[in-house]
Image (cartoon, rainbow, N blue to C red; front, side, top):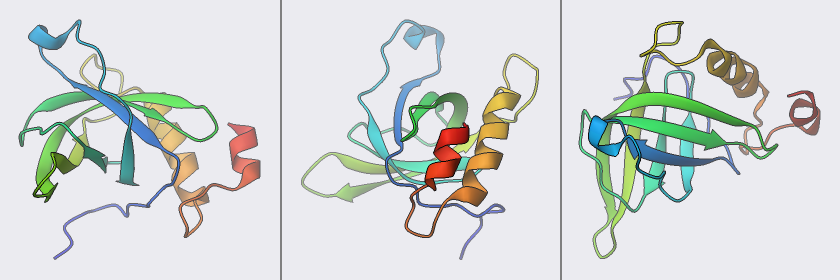
Length: 134
């Protein structure tokens, strides 16, 4: 049963780097880049070689095929191991709210997602004219 409120789109050539949000990881480096499975204005799912726990708060840096980068904060809603012999996981993240409060995601990131998502083609690519205008 689908429980998502907003549709997610599969986008090619979008990567995510992340780290846990906690005082202990403030100076930690971001993970290597991983592929995104799908993305919406409220969250994303991505592949990772690092397991995360449900409820963990994370900082995400998304890089798009046009070179644009947005930073988001969210928490792990779900995860599942997708390969029994390797440490490959699929991780679902819900973004924190967007707004002007310190704990919120920047409104410019929401605007980017609003422009991006309706422009994606069914195969997950973006039209050239969209990439040129960002």
